[in-house]
Length: 93
Length: 160
Image (cartoon, rainbow over all chains, first blue to last red):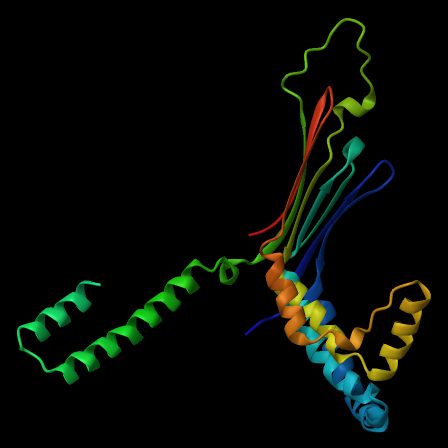
């Protein structure tokens, strides 16, 4: 079963900024899950109301597609080292 | 080939009938097709491709010998290095999001594209086209090498 990444490493270094964070994504997923659960009756109503226009189907399918995109973020890595010791490092675990 | 020869020899020696030989040869033909298909699948590198890599490396030119009068600038110590790894499955999942765009949104997007001079209909993109495009990324390879006096820059885009 695919699961989204739990942590995100973010490192941004340039002349004026130095950011080095481990972001606990699992908290974001928890909050998003709880919000989704709380808003699910409203979302369901919106889906039913908007179904004839085509946007209802979009809303219904958007969640699972977004989840699959988030799950694949786990293997994404970005490492850029620029001039004058500028650095951007992003990866997920 | 050896099996085929054996079957023909057995037929010649009357150890098997013509019908039995025909049946054995047809069975062998099916097995050969299956083996060829399996070999093709093994040779097909697409199933093993997992990432799209973009790598940029700047390295000092080993042939460069500083001479008297050469001015060194701050840029000489700066090297651009980029290493990006994008999973193919992420590209696939992202492109599949376009398949759920509602028809009314297509019209708006198409009209905006036409205004910019792109006569392109998003509705013509089908899931099999997206799959074909992603599979074609497996054959993509970009190698650019740029040399100047002091540094060599290599840019590579490839699938692995």
